[in-house]
Length: 155
Image 1: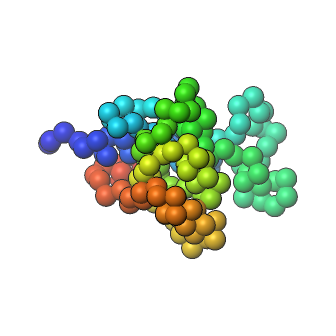
Image 2: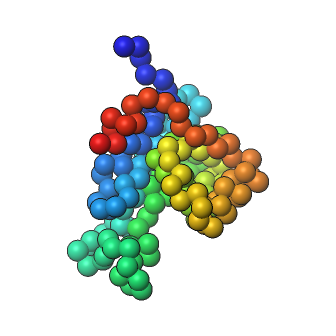
């Protein structure tokens, strides 16, 4: 077997990072890489630090019983985990799920130049459509991941 490509390597890191998520339904991972193929940051979806997760729901419920009010997305965490925000200018973001509109704003504002995504299962949602529009209008390149091994790591 030949060496894996850079895309396979970095998406593999994103997929492994997703396994850290405690979300019972949607595990998402992200890996940010610079032009020298060096990992700048990684992240996964989870509750904000210092929050007692036993007091907050992981349900898709309504009102205060909805995880969507609390969870930090993988790409947002990867951006926040970066020690030097200016280090993101011109980087590539590998993410296992297409970014939402809120994460798209952070991606654009930090100067990330490309998003390589594995899945876009929410493509029909208005927030995902807004995300795609913002990313395209700002010149962020969108690439659907086509590499090997994702099916092995996802299990």
